[in-house]
Image (cartoon, rainbow, N blue to C red; front, top):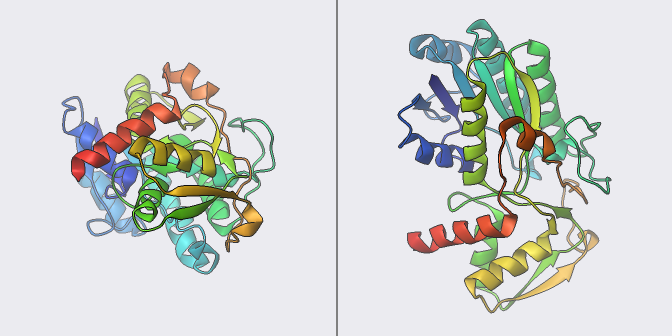
Amino acid sequence: MNILVTGCKGQLGTELQKIATSDARHFWLFTDVDTMDICDKEAVEHCFSANDIDVCINCAAYTAVDKAEDESELAERVNVYAPQILSETCLKHDALLMHISTDYVFDGDADEPYSVDAPINPQSMYGKTKAEGERLIRESGCNHFIVRTAWLYSATGKNFVKTMLSLADTRDEINVVADQKGCPTWAYDLACALVRLLNQNGKKPVHETFHYTNEGQITWYDFTLAIMEICEKQCKVNPITTDQYPTKAKRPAYSVLDLSKIKAYAGIKIPFWRESLIKCIEELKRKQ
């Protein structure tokens, strides 16, 4: 199949590029905003037509959660308008859209993992735009997989793991929120899961939503302790509350996602979060 990946310079797109280098099964086309603006309907149509696209994996998103509160128009353009264009183009070309969404579509008030069909109730502009993007994809009628994820990190780009390690090199101690619970997701694991879904489904008609993170649930404080331990950093980590670390956009207190559907559908064995964190840190060390 001919696979188009948008947002290829982000964390997930970068991991998909690694997989593609050893995948002779498909033809991969990688784009980012500098080579194709997914908000440009004509440019998207030309790309699909010229390359006979069978699958579009949309990794592009506006993910600056706090800035989205002030830059709502830009967030809507990337998270709402662009998915609408991609879904309409996929429908026209009978292509499959694989779209990445987020735990922020939920309100964070649950006390058990969110199922894929749990009611959404986004509390931030970022979450609202991602929820609206999901809605437009479903209403378009195109074949699609919507995959919600959370706490994404990798050895590239900006993410929590790299930020904590950078702070550990410049500070004796740091404060980290200990009352927000979720689960980290190594971008490489998510990329592998997407390819597994794609290969298993092929060109069959599909309209499905899935959740994918690594296994387990922890707080940001727990996650930071593990990062410091694995990297043998001496930086002291102090637990604080959400109220002690105010942000412009509301963060979900509980954002654990129920993974049972994707495991049953695709036969995926999902790694435990600590296993994947160790592998990512090993990759970071190799890059140093």
